[in-house]
Image (cartoon, rainbow, N blue to C red; front, side):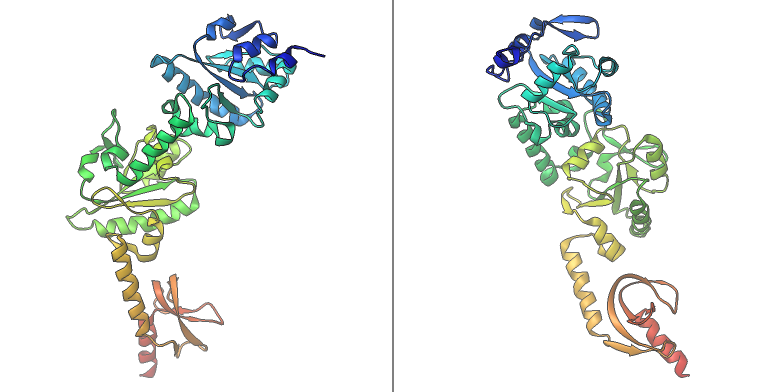
Length: 392
């Protein structure tokens, strides 16, 4: 039998007012009460599918509120309409209290029909009602998390423009473009001093993405600190690191940077989030190395620092090739096997990223004489010393 939904399904999916009318929706709700459907005429409309029982939904609402208020202040003619996945009206009411926009009055059957019409398979979902609107499959919520109000009007064209801007910044931007914005042209030091970004010009820079809650980050911070102090021991402060925190709150951020001798982007600054997006940071720790001209010289700074330490400076491909060539030459001059008088097994030459010498008890890297049978390693120089000492 023909009914409201049967009639509505032939209506353009972007003409939400006709769809609402066909479904029997007589008014919308605001925080102040009932609002006529006509109040949305001429505005860009977005549907927000969400539920009070959904934790990601409750997390995204404050971000949407910030976006909504920012766009309203800019004079953008838009409206968001909440369509609920809640199971009961009390959940709907509780969730809607946190929203400054409009809502379809609670009606579980009506909401289900709208959910099916717009093929919403997960929440939260944010659906722009325009012909070039970003689809659910392209993760509209992710776009909002990444770009905020800059993504308006949330079309595919605008998304491609934003991605192109990110690519240009990643490949061509200088330090000021990457690290500053209209309201801030400085970084903060460990004592909360403000250091102008212009003072970093001409230095090699490491953008350090990390968080205090991550054990791998804490371990790498120790390595990076050694390299930082080694390179900056003299008057020539040639290497600077900038913390791009992914800590969960300000307290963690302060604990994290308390162990670091370098600079940081302020925690409450959105630039942290923008840099994570621009450099496609998916896991931590990550160290992005920038040359004196401000251009990326390595996206894998953690490997470079962990493998070669301060000797890798200025971290260019040419310097790494020179180090690798020197290591190969060093290895070619060493015997493949040795017998050490203090160890019962033959020791074989191996390349080791890091080890502790069982004779001198000091840290070793690269070439080691190791035992295949037991956990025993010697510096090449220590093998010679042990042999000489034992032969006397």
